[in-house]
Image (cartoon, rainbow, N blue to C red; front, side, top):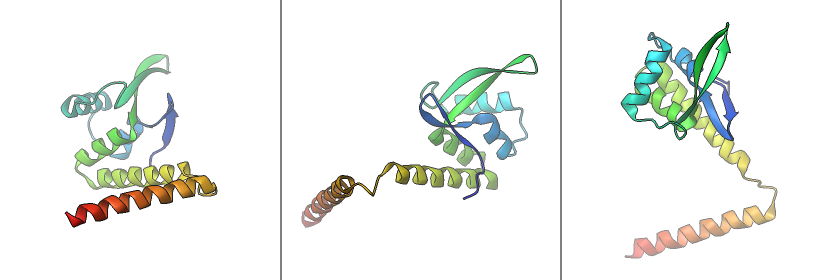
Length: 131
């Protein structure tokens, strides 16, 4: 999978730089207006859905936004264009890969636990079908 938008680590969480997302989505709006509008319109919460930090660029302070992957997916989805759909699908694929990496299939205890969890969920599903 080709990297469309870089996913970084910030404060122990996987995040997307909002400026990079804005650029990828080919939004014609000014970045600061665009991101502030998205935050307000969709009720994103600072330090939950996104974090801000200051960066010095050409001797001027600039506010940067680190978006959670879920927030970036939602922003991409509401952009309403092909680039938004492409970005959303990309983030979903990245999340799947990250989740698969977190599972150590070489560890027999992990595999056994997964099998037990699956067996329990199947048992519950079959019991629910009987009623």
